[in-house]
Image (cartoon, rainbow, N blue to C red):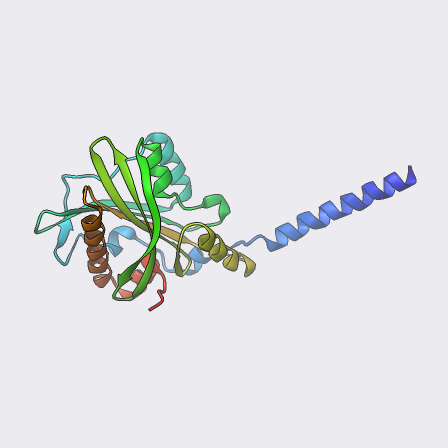
Length: 228
């Protein structure tokens, strides 16, 4: 009985110490609170280069349940469709979250589109060459009936653009070890096109045009600090 009691006491002490250690290692300082407040409507211009907003087409709208989840994850969202002088259209969607801990992970297009009844195919990682460096991106196809939508997106965690998945988790861990909770952003561009190659070329050109018209400090919020 005495041995059993000693074991129980020891286990209780270990549980208390474990809980205290977990609390001590749980990041609490939000990087977003130390940064200038972000305003997506102000950052992203309504007109830039050869592009302007096309009010006639609204990007993918999610159902009420999905929207409720997004509202818990993100502080701000922005959805627009742009058109150029050739009549080519690109849909832009940006979501910003001030808390990108594991409990508030960014909402990936693979999940969002699948929830809307799309078939997701041809998912792969890539790099988008910009005038500011190489941007790590994911690309995928979303298909529903006759709608064929090639998608390019990227994720920023804190001050760095990372590939979703392991790199994303490692970046969060780096912040967590310093007691900080990073903010994050997901930027998605897509277009309706059955020619995937042309669609991705158009999206890349759109991204480069957009980045070229944004202030330096605001651009870093969108794409982080890139490797040349």
